[in-house]
Length: 430
Image 1 (cartoon, rainbow, N blue to C red):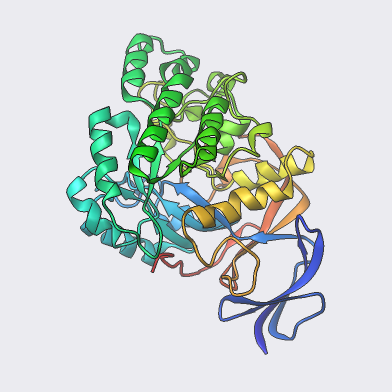
Image 2 (image 1 turned 180 degrees about the horizontal axis):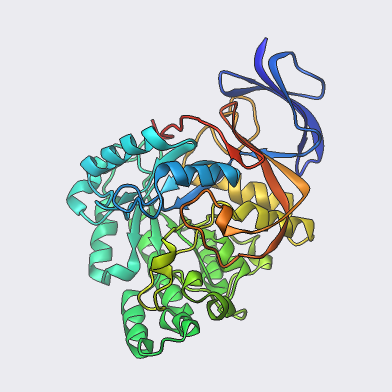
C-alpha cells in the first residue's frame, strides 16, 4: 500500500483527470482509476500543477533578517504554491566564499519549510573554483556594480570551472550597464518625483548590458541567464542570440509583466525596483510570454519604514511570492495566459535550466511536489495578510481569481487554505 493517493486531479493543459500515487516522497503512479493508499486527499477536480520553482528570491538571511528570513520567506513561498526557491547571494555577509555558502546552507536547513538552493556570489574570483564544488544554482553577477574589464575577468574565471555532472556553470546576471545607470542617476537625482526613477535606469541601460552579456556568453562559452528581463527589446536580443547557438536564457517578473511607471506615481517607493517599471512601449507584455524562459518573482522584501523614504533613498524591491500565481491565474481565467505557459515558465523550465533533476514535472519518479489551484476562488490582494515580513505591495487592492489552496512538498501538505504547516525543506543540490 502506498503512502498517499491524490484523487480526482485535473492535469493541465492536457485537461485530464488522474489519480496520483505517492510513496517515499516520490510520484510512483499516475492512473485513470483509484489507487489504494494509507492516506487519500480528494483534489475534487481542481487544477494540480507541479510545485512551482522560483529561481530568484532574496530571503535576506543572514544579516537582514528584520526584512525577511528563511522561515518567513519559505512560509510565503508555500502560501504562493512554490515548493522550491533559489536564494540570491547579496546577504550579509554575501554568499561569495566557501565558508559563507556552507553557513547559509545550515541556516536555511534549520528554517526552510520548502526545498531550497543557493546562488553564489562571484565577487571574489579566488573563491570561484572551490565554490563551484558546492553546486550553487548559478554565479550571480550584478553588472551595474562593475566595469567591463572586471566583468570580463569574472567571466574568464568562471569559464575555467570544469563541468559538474555534465553541466557547465551558469552565470545569472542583473543586466544594467554601470556607466549608463550612474550617468542617468546623476542627471535626475535632484527630482524627488517617484515616476522620474524610471528615467534614471532607462531601457537602454538594460539593453546595452544584455548585448555585452551575449558577447561574453559567446566568448567564454558559458550558460548565461538574464534575471528580471524588463524590455521587449531585451527579450528579442536574447532570442536572436539563442538562434545563433549562444547558451542564454531569460526571466521575467510579474511586476514587470503587469505594472508600468504609473504605479510609481500611485505607490511611490513601494513600487521601486531594479530594473524599474517600464513604459508600455518598452515593457515586456503578455504577448511576450512565448519568448521568455521562466517567470521569477525577484521576491525582494524590505520594511515599510525603509520603503517610506524618498524614491532615491528607499531600497529597491517588491515582495512577490504570495501574489505571483494568483496574478498569473487571473490572466489564465481571462484567456490571456495558457496553462501550458504556466507549467513551462514556473515549473518545467526552471527545473531544466537550474538542473533540478527531480522537480518541475508530474512524472513517475519525480519528487511529489504539487500546488492545487481553485480556478473559481476569488480574492483581493491584501499585504497585511502576507506571511512575508514585507507587508506592502504595488498589487494591493488587485482583484484576483484562481488561487493556490494546497501546497504539497514531497508528499506532505505544507499549506492548506492559507494555513502553513511544519515541514523540513532540503537543499536541492546534495
